[in-house]
Amino acid sequence: MTQTTFTRRGFGALTLGGAATLAACGNGVGNSNASTIDARVDSTLSEMYRSFPNTIDLAGKANGMLIMPLVTEAGLGFGGAYGRGALRINDVTVDYYSVTKASGGLQIGAQQYAHVLFFMTENALLEFRRSPGWAAGADLEYVVSDRGDSVAADTTTVLSPVLAAIFGRAGLRIGATLEGTKYTRIIP
Image (cartoon, rainbow, N blue to C red; front, side, top):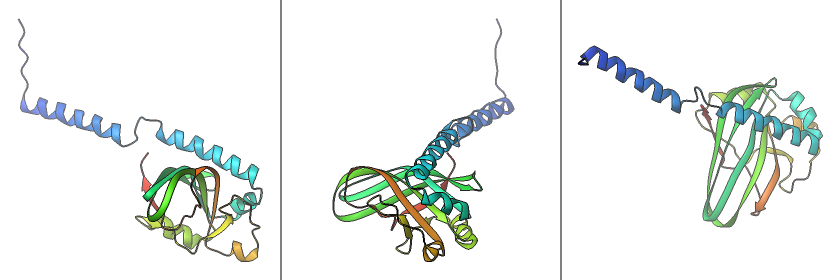
């Protein structure tokens, strides 16, 4: 009959190995969340370019783009929104972000939509990337209106530091704006 004994060192190694394995499960190592987000980002960009051709030129001039393929927003008195997406620079994903929004007031309904932020200046992109939680404000210029109509990007619009496109809307909720929306870097 063999007796197994655990030493303090062996128990510590076993515990440390188990903790590392559990930590890896929660931090994105070994899962497909990043590839899922990237596939949705690719699909969203294809849809945007097909539906709103003026965004192709904007993408070429942008220093970076934050693509949020699916944002779900709902409200009944108080409301909120959540989604995940990717920041791309030169068509390469460099970071992943979540988007959250809370709202109050007279509201009812739910909707889903996609949106893309075009960072037209290097300074706007750096400010976004350095921020621990960047909030979109009322100073955003929209290149696709909240009705889904394409807005011409003229020379004044292109000089804005951050441009936004909201599209692919489904649901029953009036209006979509990015004002008060917060973006936070995540590890998918």
